Length: 595
Image (tube, one colour):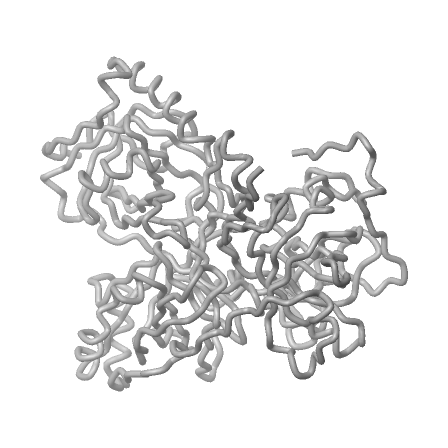
């Protein structure tokens, strides 16, 4: 290896002129969930000769160049790029990631050492799968024996306007547990189902799925969007070990014609508030309604400590926290999740709504933990108070606690759009919320409690000068897949200064959710910075605007306008692969909308 070559662990945050020699293990594009022709960013997983991995992202302006010059599986030298701290939706466990631009220099390596690694993956254990349910921090890789494949079917989701294609593949993990992997859109149709099914009649078909998100909807499943790839019977140690045991108990792969793919969700019907509050929740419990409402009041309690396993309320338990759900009982550190209780209505009346998790995040454009860190205890952030008197289109349904308590409350399952001085709307790319409950907390605390007093905020209570500031089980148990939607990723939306009035972008919560994910500022700012890198390397900005690609030998050792609400670029997932589930403290289904 020449002195100019750097191994990936030696990269430090900042501009880098040095050369890295890596294999492009994965390459994918992430497009707008509602417009597949609109590219938001391209991504790669790179691996060096020692097996170190890193995530690289390509600005849209340079995506075409990389698409023409870079092929998945080949080895390249890259110069002139930027190293930054990674955020959510990490496809590999690396605290850094790379940003490539039109100034990045590309050289294809012809003489590749035989031992140069091909695949980049990190197989998750059952314990890790449980910990990652509805998390956006890291994509998940799994290995298993394919037992069943479904046909491709269409389903109505909250993530996209219109129907989405999906396919379910059931695999048996090394632990013996069954798990569904749900592939969405192009990923569903790209899976060579017939060929794999045929080969699976005589011998086990071992698959490694990479780049998935763990979902929860009555059980665990994996959701595979644009970032998802798979390898069938690859020559790697883990596959060889699993194949040895699978051969002794092989059963042909079955064809499941209707595994979850024929279910189509009825579209939400437009209703007035007076219509829905007079409905019988026993008869309409599973129905969703489309309402256009204006926010009148906001309760002072806007977040709670949620169980990482089931998303319900946790309470102090010694030095840790314990889930209040008797069926869960998880003990560990919780995650901070939104729970906004608002009074909203139209000209026919007002009623109470609960907005959980990522739906609230899409409205505030900040993650709950960010707002908690940035504001004093008991303070309602400006990002929340500025929702007052704004008009939104929401898809809602009755909360479970409506029947239990007799108090009518609706859960916001999807934020469809925001009305700006008129009736025209631009469809949003919703992603799920989290479960609901009627019990409202009287103040900002560590858990949702049933208190008699509730501090509500109305527009009149705001200062006149207020300005918004910016494991494995012994018995095989199939984990059912959610009726969720395709994945979204945190980096899916980039907002520039002049786009500010055109769209509301949310930040990715975990993974990804960061949502707007201006991970290093706007592309324009990055271009300026990277131009200086190239100039410092000895070339003018004009000359370096074209990335060079050459082969070389590998060196030896008053219009009515509606603001569009974007999901955190996330993703799945990735581009949110599934309907997201709601967080519910008590009697609601915590995974209802976040699947």
